[in-house]
Amino acid sequence: MKLSTLLTVLITHLVTLQVVVQGINLNATKLTSQNDTVHLQAFQNVIPHYNGMLSNDLNNSNANIIGMERLKKTPFPPWLTEFTGITEWPGLNPPYIPLDFIDMAKIPNYATYQQGNCDANPREACSFDCDYCVEPDDVHTCYKLSQTFDDGPSPATERLLQHLRHRTTFFNLGINIVHYPDIYKKMIDKGHLVGTHTWSHEYLPSLSNEQIIAQIEWSVWAMNATGNHFPKWFRPPYGGIDNRVRSITRMFGLQAVLWDHDTFDWKLVANDPSQSEGQIYRNVMDWMKTGRGLILEHDGAERTVDVAINVYDIIGRDQLTVAECVGGADYIRKFDYNGEL
Ligand SMILES: [Zn+2]
Image 1 (cartoon, rainbow, N blue to C red):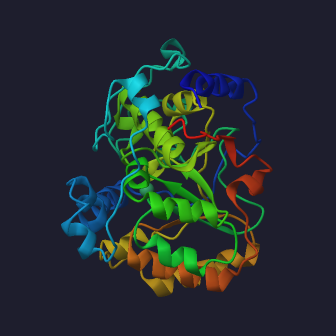
Image 2 (image 1 turned 135 degrees about the vertical axis):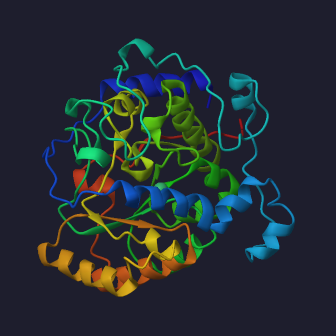
């Protein structure tokens, strides 16, 4: 697949971007800024595979520690070198590469802000994590109660894949995809739907427009190079999305996916006593009474995967992918590279 063709596909998709009408107000309990901060700390400090893979040593010692055989990164494709001038996958801060289908003049001029600093912009900026505001093309619920999983692929993901007997939705980090391509491919082979969760899990409203674009473009390229497809569904880390972020992700043809049921399973990994496995299962049984909604879970750590397996056993296989929830396509496009990589 030539890059020019890829871009044409993108532009074509922009015209046909599917708009799914949703309600504007959500009834979920508002996150506190303290919770958000703990989540950030949990992600950066507690999940060991994430820090390990950034030290660029996964091909040797860490491979033994995490119990996997020699790990092989996704090869960096020649078409991407041709386009970017870069020869290897970036680290936590991917470089901004200009794209001709991104019109910077159309990005609204809202202020950047750190997580929890919710006074930076007027309400019409429509922040999900500050105000639980959603736009008409956001997906935040489902007519059938369904699990979704963020932050993989990780070594823990494999156990989840072995257990699930239905098609589910994973929102993956680009940096994890290129480090765990075999687990990513297993996801795909088992028929699961994969969306992007950015390249390296930054809180997008705190970033410049160029940094947001870099987070999205590198995650998309990771999926192009590993799974030969172009994502349609996007979940912002920490639910961090406002109309500045949306304007950029829409230009990629992506639709944002949020949630209306949060397990707060990451608190287990952070040893936060305000959440327990038992509480999560009680919540799930409450959610089953309405039979609807999108559940937020994580497959980045063994303990959250344990919970995910038990939640699956409670709900059963009668669940939907995000695309099925709204009658949308799985991907903007699937590619056959024919060895051109
Ligand atoms: Zn996440």
